[in-house]
Amino acid sequence: MRKTIKIFESIKEIHWQSNNMTVVEADGKKITIALFKEHLYAFAYKCPHAGGVMAEGFVDSLGNAVCPLHRYKFSLRTGRNSTGEDYLKTYQTEINENGVFIIFEEKRWF
Ligand code: FES
Image (cartoon, rainbow, N blue to C red; front, side, top):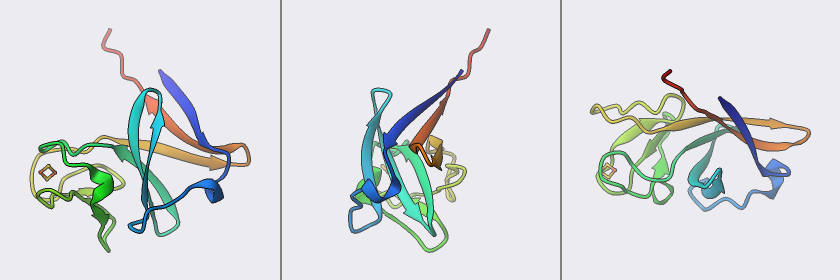
């Protein structure tokens, strides 16, 4: 199932922290949003390793979200951890004339 949730009317409405990240609430979840090279990325609020708050970290020059706690790096695009086996949950985003959206894909196993 695919759910598209509007998070802002336009990209200009987003108040970025100094690290080009912010946190939004969508579909009952806190989601981290990051801007990197003019692309918008959405991913989990907490790090899968030990719960670090990803919005308190930063994005490195290669496009990895770096966790503030133990500095694990996760690709903004795939969520893949460059040094271990943890995956950061990522979400697709969409920007169009109607607003800024996060797309939730729910997998069903039946
Ligand atoms: S909690 Fe994020 S790297 Fe450990």
